[in-house]
Length: 465
Image 1 (cartoon, rainbow, N blue to C red):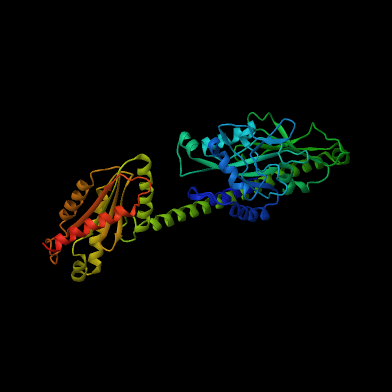
Image 2 (tube, one colour; image 1 turned 180 degrees about the horizontal axis):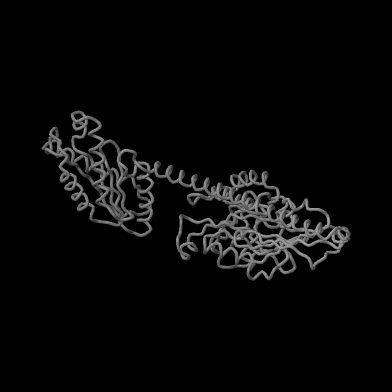
């Protein structure tokens, strides 16, 4: 169980950084997992779909699956179109599709048992397994259960934020008899009946599976060995072993000591086996978690490198362009202003030529650090524009001139010597800026061009004295 559940964490890596993979990418990764774990019925992606998005989600899959529909099951067992509700949790991706067609599109929110586990997992950010259920794709009469792993945008720390930022769930579908059949217990000697019991609170000691030694054997129910299994994803299961009457009869002619010793050996064997399997599973779980954490850290470092200028530590030109486009669209929606400030270090080439490039790099770092200290709002950004140039993006402000003046004064107050400058004995900057309240149809590059022309005029004034 533990090993099977941890495969969901491997599949969840596809959803890192808030991105939802396509059907084909999900299917490919799921197939790799299923080839190694044959007792998994299916792997699924369950998005959170609010009612206003229902038609959009449906239309996306109709291109590849013309008969796709968000469904629910009637009491008679028939699948019908899901009734309207505030939000849905449909089976949006499923692998393999063959054999699980009935589950494709099924809305888990229509089932109280499934919905209860979904909400518990969503609010606690802890993976959960459901109580036993009859799978919608079940064709026989065996019980199954689902295991959920919640996927969020970012790392929400409160219940309210988890509810608001939930993307959906990576889900595993399991048939209890299949898991039992894949365990070493299937090789137990003839004459022992095995019962798997769910003792999770509110489950009322439900019998999940009975492994019978044979239909002709009557079980001696007054003798039983019970072993609690380690709690996994919110479920507490126990294993109960009972001998059959024939098992007892065969051993009646043995000496009482031999019977006692055999019982002790059997008990120790079962206990040791479960202990060894538990420790091995715990080790595998720890390794999977460590590797997942290492991968997440590597992704974070890679993301930081992709958006940061390696020398100065401020944002690079590429990230600034993305940030500016995003803030531009938000300014249009909010009918607010946006300002773009372009800064250039005066006579920086002469600084590099005379002091050397290492000193030039130190100068750039000091200027970048000072500029970064002057902006504090989430909607503001400092970026290296190129060479000795920097740019500031200021959202919802009409005081760009004041900020620009403050930048110029603060850099001059650093008192970085520059005896080769024609402007002053210390490092100075020239500034150009533009502020606008954008409207639909306006080209954001226009603001950059205006700021660049203003900077050019400022530079000309410095050069001509």
